[in-house]
Length: 310
Image 1 (cartoon, rainbow, N blue to C red):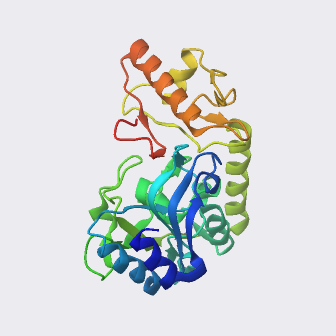
Image 2: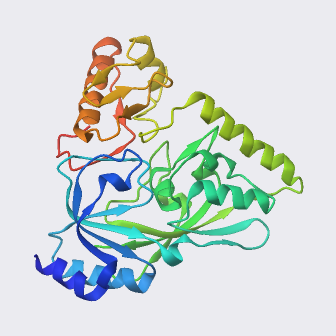
């Protein structure tokens, strides 16, 4: 047992787990284990973890795990510490005049429905994204013509490599672009504030939610996947269109297959291998490059695949 794992075991008790399943905590439900996983319920506990990491002088790799909906973990796993926020980080507070405060661990579909019931509009798109608020901020998640940048006002972030005082950063400082923010791997989103629009007609908002859910069921597959695999190119056709034009729907490598329903989704069989998904991603990317001269970029976070990953 390493010194840092021993310290976490003493300080965090049963909230720390060694050799913890990681792949099974993602929506792909495949992949290996993490050397350590700690569940953190509040800022004070997070600062305890930060102090232990400080003593390692940056020698321990750290991964923040939300709902695991945008992540593929290699079969070799992750040789580091996974931090999973829960407890107070799951809170959603409705303030006044359309202002809302969301903890990083707030689940997007749950938050979207709660806000609609409160007569607040601007976050309906999130009902179809099975992620957490913190992860959504980090990648500027979006859908159905909107994204989190449209409503985000500020976020509170803790830098694991910095001092122990969380800082509040305005949305303008986050360089929010298509599926991008300036938040780094060693920064943890704790909470954020959004400004939504007050709408008296709650039934209208509920109808929008129903339409989004219906559209996603009709156009996107269920099962073991992590949503869109590749970021849409800046100009020209979308990633799904390029992949579909090459006739790659149904293309299979081992336990992984390009979805027959949506060409930018890759499904994995129950009990399958993360490395099969990765190999299929590499193959699809190569074919698109050779046929169209377009370099697709992964929208999924690839964990444990090495420096040469997509």
